[in-house]
Length: 184
Picture 1 (cartoon, rainbow, N blue to C red):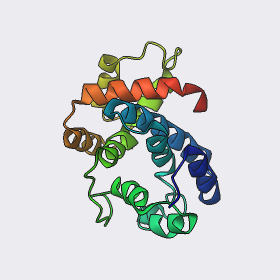
Picture 2: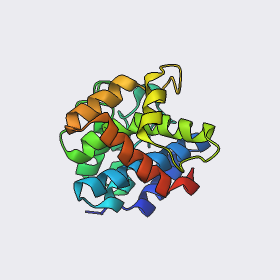
Picture 3: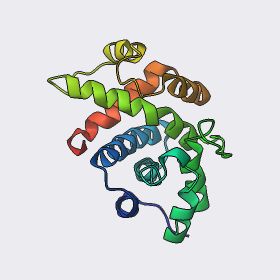
């Protein structure tokens, strides 16, 4: 069975995605997942690879997101466990039957939408990620008009499922995304 690497994820995503914003989002989620893996003492590159590839079917099937992941990734030799992890991030949003149960799955569920808020906030700050803190990010999080497409309920559910606080997950996302700020 092939081990999913970040390089392999980038190669696969290029086959199914053309929109620049989806590559930016992939890089942001990858950075956040790498930081979450570090928090849990897990394989940072593996989690980053999963984060990068999580929206592999979104451009082609936005209304059926995650329902075509297995069809796209099995021929690439992506392990079933990784495919399940990717599919699980849409649990409850689409007719997806893979419930997030592992720390990797729960992390992906929590940070997917959160990275959108963190990234949007970085774009409006002259210093981007430098000096970004949880307190100011939380103010943006509470403003439903800011990054309005980012689902706060999904983020909150994901954070709760991880048994963490929103502050903790925000801090980890900021740290992870700041470390890769040149990628998006």
